[in-house]
Every structure is written in structure tokens, then in C-alpha cells.
Length: 263
Image (cartoon, rainbow, N blue to C red; front, side, top):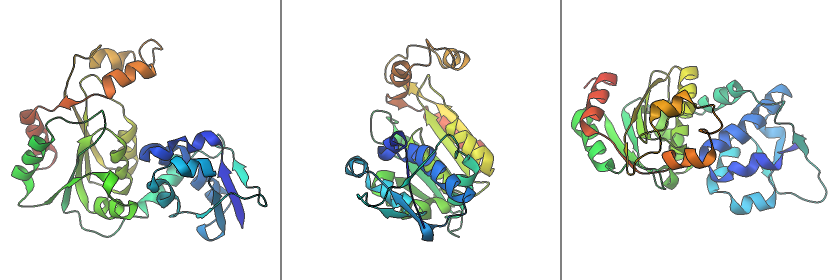
């Protein structure tokens, strides 16, 4: 039996679905694999201040892999060195084992909340229905309203996931090989974090940029060319072009869909 925890910074993603996996689950699972621990003998200690601010999915996700234990004055858990236990593949393998045997008959459109969203969601959803509703089930999902199990079950049968760049795309972890992720971005922004997941699991990946609701400060080409330049890749600048509403060209959207998933 082992009682473990992570350094405080690793718990910061308690309010973000994507970073929970990357900055927390990844280190935890790699540690367990290397030291031959299983869920049965692993107790994970979450600081009480973290549990107060974390979304419910934080604990729900972790309970798939470990037993959750409240901090106390008797047990001092081992603190995992996240720099040492950082293999992505271990996490990928474990998450994909959670898939169900649901047939790939569903197309899922992510309807995202927050500052970054697609302004013409309804028009995009209508395109999906027009093209595919005779062959596939079209599901409009707000993942914030689904339990972790419901998300896993839904994505296990998803042949095409479409939606705005955001934490919801993390559900790519639960998609089967040869399925498709079609990611939508604001006008001057792109990041390949979900493409990397797709590449590892042989999931087909496509993306499209929309037109931002306000004039972006730089072009996408300039941003990509100078991505590693300190003057360009700053949190403030990234947020100014990433976290804004944007509109998708419906005609181009339809053409891209037909190319990646025949009617």
C-alpha cells in the first residue's frame, strides 16, 4: 500500500479538464507503472484546499485509477517528482483502455461556453445534420453537463468530433483509431496539442480557422512563424487572439467535412 500526492503546482488544473490529464494524471500513472502499483494499493491524497476549488470531474477522473484519501495528520504521503515521472504514452495507454465497445455511429459537435466559442454554432450543426443525419446520430454536447463516464461512453462511439479548440477536445483520448477530430480555431491562433494525441493513436486530424469577432492583432502566418519569439508568445497576446468569439465560413466548413468524411 502506498500513499502519494503531487507537488502543489500540479493541482492547479483542478478547474481544467485538459490540464488535469497532462499535469496530473500523466505523472500519477507513470509513477504507478514504474513502481508496479495498482488502483487497489494506491491511495492518492488531494489537499483540502484543492478539493474546495476543483470541479467535480477532478475527483471523478482520478477515481478511475486510484483510491482518493482525505489528508490527515497521521499519514505523510510520498510526493511524486513530476520531472521524473512524465511519460505521455503510459497515460495514453491507460485512457484508451477505458473505451467501451460502442460502434462508431455518432458525430459529436462541441458547443462550448466561455469567452472562446463559435458564434454560428447552429449553422455548423445544421450542416452536419444535412450531410450526415441519415447515416449517423448527430449529438450536440456540452461536456460540462456530462459525467466523466457519460463522456467516455459517448466518445467511444464517436466517428467524428467537431468543435472549438478547448478542453472538450481532450475527449479525443477516448476515441477509437481511424476516427476523426475536426478542430475549429479563432482567426490568428493555432496550437497542435490535440493533433499530437491524434498522431499517437492514429486518429485523423483536421482543423479550420474562422473569422474573429474583432480584428486580430497579428495574422496566423506571423504568429506561427514567430511562435517561439518572446515578444509574440506571451500569455496576454495569446489570450487576445485565442479567447475570443469567432465565425466559421459555413460553405468552407461543408466542403472540408465532405472531404474528410464522405456523405
